[in-house]
Amino acid sequence: MTSADTPVVLAPVTEDLVAGGPERHRRPRASSLARAQAGTAGAFLLPNLVLVVIFLLIPIAMAVYYSFEKMGSLGTAQFLGVNNYLDLFRDSYFWQTLWNTLVFTVFTVPVGMALGLALAVLLNGVLPGRVVYRSIIFVPLVISGVATGVLGAWMFDQYNGFFNKLLAAIGISGPQWQSSGPWAMTSLVIMTLWQRVGFDMLIYLAGLQGVDPQLLEAATVDGASPWQRFRRVTFPLLGPSTFFLLIMNIIYSFQVFDTVWAMTRGGPDYSTTTVVTYTFREAFDEHGPQQLGYGAAIGVVIFLVTMAITVLQWRLSRTRDQAS
Amino acid sequence: MTVAVGAGVLADAEVQPDSVQPRPRYPRQKRGRFFWLRMVVAVVATVIVLFPLYWMVVTALSPQSDMYAPGLHLWPQHFTWDNFVTPIERFPVGRWFLNSTVITVAVTAITVVCNLLAGYAFAKFRFPGRSALFLVLLSTMMIPVQAIIVSQFRLSITLGLFGNIWAVIFPESATVFGIFLARQFFVSIPDELLEAARVDGAGQLRTFAQIVLPLCKPLIAVLTLLTVSYEFNAFGWPLVVLFGNEQLYTLPIGMVADLQSEYASDYPAIMAMNLLMIAPMVILFLAFQRYFVQGLARSGIK
Image (cartoon, rainbow over all chains, first blue to last red):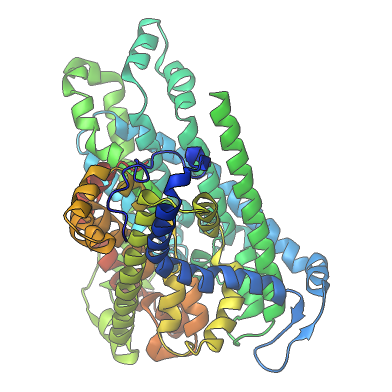
C-alpha cells in the first residue's frame, strides 16, 4: 500500500500475460516495492482465489482420487485402484453414450455454424427491420437449457405436439419422436440448433464487421460473382470466427446435459443419453447418490477429453498466429 | 461463458454497421435481384425462431382439452388462466421463484466483486508468478461441472453447506470468466489517473473504489447481466445438491423434479410455468440489449 512514488513499476501492463512478456527482466532496486505490490495484489486476488481453490481445484483433485474408489453415499469407501476405469472400458453403455455424444456433436456443430453464417451474411447487409430480426434470433440464447428442453418435449410430442399435428394436417403420419431412438435424437438436435444458432450468427456478424468493404469492391471490379466474393474473400477472412466457434461449439455439445435431461431424460432407453447425462444417471439418478466413485471416473474422462480439445485449440491457434 | 464471449463481439456487430455502410450503396433499382429473396428468407428464419415461443404462449393460455384435441389451431380457441393457477396452488412455485432470485442475486454479487478485484490485480499490479497464476485460472474454465460434481457433493456435506442454499451459492460463485473481462477493461484505464489519486494520499483500495470503479459502470453492468442470465438458468449443480428438498428448489429444478412428472400429460400447465421461468430473462435481455451492447463496445472486448 506504500507504492506512491513508483512510476516504473506502474508502467502500463499491455504485454500479453499468457505469453510471459518482458516482465522477466528484474529491476533490483524495485524488489522491495515489488514485494509491497505483491502483497496488495494478493489482497485483491484473495477472495476469488479462495473460492476457486475450494470449489474448483480441490474438487478436481478429489475427483481423481474418488475415481479409484467404490463409493456410495452411505458406508465407507473402498479402494478399487483402476477398477472403475476398467469397468468403464468394458461398459457397453459408456461406449453407447460416447457414440451418442459424437452423433449429437457432428449434427449440431457444423449445421449450426452453417446456419449462423448464412443468417449473419443475410442480416449484415441493409435490410428493413434487420435489427428486429437479429434481436429475435438472439432471444433463445438467454433461455435456459431446461426451458428449451421442456418446450422441445412439447413441440415434438408424438401425439399432441405441434409438428405431428402439422404433419397430420397435410395427411402425413408423423414420426415417433419419443419412442424411436433416432427420431428422439433428431428432435434434440433440432431444439439445440434452435437455441444455439443465434450464438453462431452473433460471432459471425462481428467477424463480418472486420471484413474490409474495399476488398469486396475490388473483387467486384475484377468481375467476381457474389458467390466467388463470398467463397474467396469473405469466408477466408472469417477464419478466426470459424475457428473460435468450432471449439466453443464442440465443447458445448460434448458437455450437453440440461436440454437432454429436460427433453428426453436420455431416453428412450439410452438412445439420447450423452456422456455427461450418463455421469448423472450413474452417480445420482432419481434414487439419490449411488455409484459416486464410478461417476467420478466418468467425470475425469470428460475432463481429460475437454482438456485435450482445449490444448488442441491452443496449439492450433498458436500455429495460426505464427503462419499469418 | 459462451454467451459472454458472444455478447462481447456483438458490440461491434450492433454499433457499427449503420454508420459504416451508408444506405445509398443499395440504390432502389439494384435491390431487384436479391432484395426480395433476402427479405423472404430473413422473415421466414425469424418466424421459425419465434414460433416455438409463440406456441408456448398459445399452449399456456389454452384449456388442456383444446391442446389435446385432434386438429391444429394456430391461435387459442378459448382463453384460460387455469394453467397458471393450478400448478401455483399445488406446488411452492412462488418459493422457487424467490429461491432463484436470491441465489442469482447472491452469486452475482459475490462473482462481480471477486472478479473485479482479481481483474484489477492482474491489470495493474506486478507480482511474481502472475503469468502462471493467470494460466491456472484460465484452465479452470475448462473444468466441466460434471467432472467435479461428485467431489462438490461430498465437499458440500463436509463443509456443512448441504441442505441450504449456500450449497448452491458458493460453488456457483467460483468462476473466473469475469476476471478476463475485467482485466481487459482495467488495462485501458491510464496509470496517470491512479498515480494522481495516490499522490493525493489515497490507498490502493480507496483508489480502486473511488476512482476506478466509477469509470467502470459499463463493465459492471455487463458482468452483472451475464452472471444473472447464467445463474438464473443454472441447472446441473443445483439439481444435484438440492434434489429432494422441495422448499429449496429453483425454478429449473422445480420444473424438472416436480412439474414434469406431475403434469406429464398436461402440457398447458408445463408451458405456463415454462413461460414464467423464461420471462424474467427475456425481459431483461430486451430491456438492456442496447446498454449491454454499448457497454461492451466501450470496454473493447473481442
